[in-house]
Length: 129
Image (cartoon, rainbow, N blue to C red; front, side, top):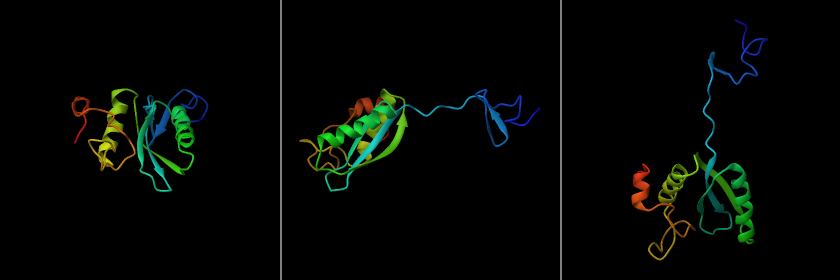
């Protein structure tokens, strides 16, 4: 058998080698993005989601346009399939980072105004507390 990359090898056929083993299927990166927005000038951070990397890039521009006096930095917290999995991942980070700031939680640590999921929906989706 010729080495990978040689004529007749796996190159160009969707096969990849890892540790000397040929893998026929590599799991693609999930499309959805959960992100953390931090204002370097001091306003509260925000956790959000976008259904694709293209939408994440557009969302950054929207945040900047909505807050012209802010200087934002964005970090990807995780990736998940859009839908309940992406909602659960966003909700996990909202809870871990101090929760939204609203009437029922005036001391929340995030600029988010609401949770992404109710307690019941979060638990049903496999969320942990």
